[in-house]
Amino acid sequence: MEQVVPEPQKYFQSYADIEVHRLMLQDDERMKSYKAAIMANKKYIEGKTVMDVGAGTGVLSIFCAMAGAKKVYAVEASDVAELAESVIKENKFQKIIEVIHSKVEDVKLPNNEKVDIIVSEWMGFYLLHEGMLDSVLVARDKFLKPGGYMFPESATIYMAPCSVPSMYNFWEDIHGVKMNSLGSLIRKSDVNKPKVIEVKESQLLSEPVVMCWIDLKENTLENLDSFTARQVIGSNKSGYYQGMCIWFECLFPAMSGDNTECAVILCTAPKSPPTHWKQTVIVLPNELLIEKGQPIAWELNMKRSDESSRRYILQLELLDPTKESHPMPCSCDMTKCIVIRTYLQQYTMEHEPNNSEDSSSTS
Image (cartoon, rainbow, N blue to C red; front, side, top):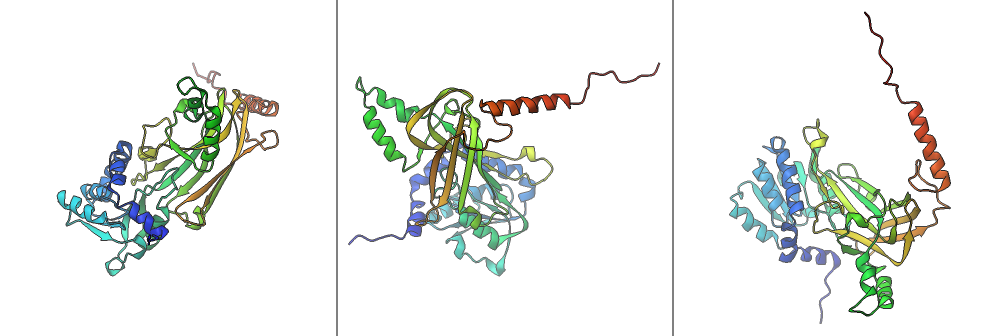
């Protein structure tokens, strides 16, 4: 008789797969960003207590120990916790890093200890899919001292309409045979499941817009249940509108508090170096030819699944831009938007300080 594994247990078992960790450790941008963020704050981490939520192989815990942390609690629910202990011992940090083989929700620290910093690599595809942000926020509420720091401290999801030639053009010529009818059937099935692929910056049809912003120090679990973005934007080029591209970036704290420009950002945008997260695309069943300046309108809903709290349902609805409210100013070439844009430009020019006048001088 086949054993049915409960959904939460399946999630943690998946992280016992060594291949998952190989993929993450070989992601150069992921590794460089976390190490740079931790080392940039070295003088503030020295002597502090850190919790690494979902520690995996323990590499982030080791970065924190290298930065001078007094104590690191490496919390890992899957059986890879045993490997983490070996890696930590191999790097001679076993006196600083304590591996706790448990879900963070079940952890109890001695004497109800609080930590100064929580570090975690919790992000999934399009940020939230199969991610462990819920567990990170639970850890924050249970263990983080007032005024403590989160690594990363915030995250933003971006989106932009795009072309997806790999999903369309491929079927034009299969060794001299047109198979667009098959391609259409495949796209219709793909509508039910977003694709994780690499998108080139040149394939985006507009400037990116923000889907949502998450503050890891303030947001509650309820804040993560659903997100909705209703948007109108003008295309910045002509091309085929074939999908909606979604990606994210995470901001790490600059703990000195006086130079946010030095904060490290982990970005998974098409213009950035590739990561194992790639980009997520909701593929349209049928393409639309878009002219430069043409308005594109849509509503994207992201809602937590009833079946699994670690998964989200994404629903994209294409809207009629002539019936939607446009932002002000709007980048599209509809007459009303051009008029408003022109007026705002003239108003700005008329009210700019006149720096060309000679200042008065004495002789």
